[in-house]
Amino acid sequence: MALTLIEKILANHSGKEVVKPGEIIDIVIDVRVARDFGGANVVKNLLNFDLEIDNVSKTFFTFDCNPTGSDQKYAENQQFCREYAREKGIKVYDINSGIGTHLVIEKGLALPGSTVVSTDSHANILGAIGAFGQGMGDKDIAKAWSSGKSWFKVPKSVKLTFTGKRPENISAKDIVLNLLNRFGANTLLGYAVELYGEAIDNLHLDERITISSMATEMGAISVLIPPSEEILNYCSEKSQKKVEGVFADEKAIYAKELELDISTFKPMVSRPGHPDDSVDITTVQGKKIDSAFIGSCTNGRFEDLEIAAKILENRQVAPGVVLKIVPSTDEVWQKCLAAGYIKIFKDAGALVSNAGCAGCAAGQVGQNGPGEVTISTGNRNFVGKQGKGEVYLGSPAEVAASAVAGVITTPDKIPEIPAEFEETTKFLSSQKSAKSTQKKVAKILEGKIWIIEKDNIDTDMIFHNRYLTITDIEEMGQYAFDNLEGWENFAKKAEKGDIIITGKNFGAGSSRQQAVDCFKSLGVQAILAESFGAIYERNAINAAFPILTYSDLSELELQQRDKIRLNLETGELTNLQNKKSIKINPFFDVQMEIYQRDGLLS
Image (spheres, rainbow, N blue to C red):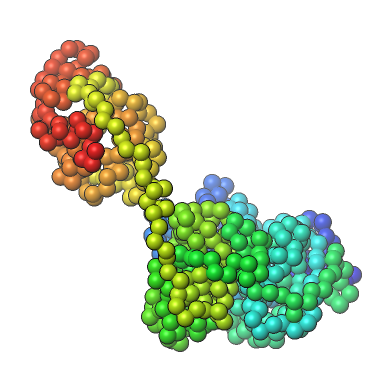
C-alpha cells in the first residue's frame, strides 16, 4: 500500500509496513526534548513515578524560554533540571544556546524521516526537513523519556501543490500568512500537510522553518516539506553521516489534494488577536507603531536577520520606536557578528539580545504594554501573548522597514522622513485617578496582633522582587511575606485591622514602595518594630501607614492573636486581653501631619 510522508515516517518507527489514518500506534522517538518551561515538571513526573531514562544520548534539555535567566522561577526550574541532568548524564543546551527546535536541526540530532517530541508546541518545525515533530505536555514527555516511545493516532494527510512563479516580493512569511488567509485556524485541523511544487522545492532551510513553524497556527499536526538536495546535504554535514531522507510514495492516498497558484500571493500581515486574521499589508499600511520585533522560532534565522540588516544599514529606527532583535541560536548570533550585522543593528538603534525564544515565552525581550502597537516576526499574536498591547505579524523585511518608517510599511515604501508621535493629552487624561478627598483618620487603633519574632526582615522577604511590576495596590496584598520562611501563607490568614509586631531593622533592603503598600492592600493597620530600615521608615510615613518603635513589650505578656489598643499620638499600648498598658514611641510631628492628610502627596 502506498503511504504519505507522515504515514511512512510513523510506519518506519512503529515496526509496521503499513499504517492507516485513525490507527493508534506506538512509535519510537528519536529525539526527546524538554525546555526550561515544562522541563521541571517532566523531571518531577519521572521522580514521582520512579522512572529512569531510556536512552540519555537521545534525551536533551533546551533552555530557550528564558535564556537570560532573568526570572527567578525560570532560574529555579533551570537549576533543578541541571542538577537532574548532571546525575543522569543528560545533555543540556543551556541559556547560551538558543531555541531547542532549531538546535536539534543545527546540531544534527534530528534528521529527515526522524521523530522528535518536545514540550514546545512548535516542535512541528521539524517538518522543515521532512521529519515528524510533535509538541507534548510534561506527562507525555516523561513517558517518552522513560520508555523511548509514545502513542499516536495516525493523522489524515493533505497534499498542497504550488503552481506558478513566486513573486520576488513574497517572503516565506507571506507564503504562510497567505495559507492562513485561505485555510484559517481550523480547516486543516488535525491533518498532516505536505507541500509540493517548484516554488517549494526551491525553498531554503530558513524559509522552510518559517512555513512549518506556523503549522500550529493553522491547526495542522505538521506541515511537512520533502527534503531537497540542499537540505539533505545540510543535514549530512551537521550529523556527520550520509542522510537519504524519507519521501511519500508516488501513489499515496490523501484526504485532500489542492493546487495553489503562488503567483497570486500578496505581501501579508496578521492583525492583532489572531494569526489567521491575515490581510494584504496595504490594508494596514501607515498604521503608527511603538515597537518592532525580529526573531522567534519563525523568523530568527541568519537569512532573516540578513534581510533586516540590508534594510537597516545606514538607516535609523524611527524616533520613539523600539526595535528588538533576537537571533534563534547562538550559531546564528555568531554568524551575524562575523558578518557585521550586530553593528548594523546597534548603529540603527536596535536592542539585540542573546539567542532564544524572546516574546512568545514572556521570558525575554519582546513583550509590550497596554496601548503599545508592535509589528513582530513571531508566529502568535493572541491577546495577552506578548503583553497587553496590539501585535501585528509580518516578515523580517516588513518589520525592519516599519521600524525605520515608524509605521507599518514595506521596504519599497519607506518614507524619506519617518513618522513621529503626535502630541496628545489622551494618555494623561486616561491615567489620572480621581482625587482623594480629605478623610478623618483614627488616632486610636484596635486590632489583633501577629507576632513575628525575627530581626532584619528585608523587603524581598516582605514583597519579593518577582512582583515588582505590579502597580495596582489592590493586587499587592496577596504577596505579603510570601518569601518569609514560616510566613508564606500570611496573606491568606491575615484579617482586616490586624497589627504586626516584629523585631529590629524591619524593612531592610531595597526602596520598593510595594513592601509598605502590600500591608495597606491587606488592611493591616500598623506595624510595631524595635527599629525600621531607613528607607522603609520614610516610605511608610509618606504613605500614611502607621509604624511605631518600641524598646520592650514584655510587660504586656502578649500572645499570638491578642487584641491590642494603640494610641498613635501618645504611644499608649494596651493588651486588651489582660488590660496591661505601657508607653512606646508615639508619632512625631511630621509623621502625624502626613498621616492626618492621608499621605505626602495628598
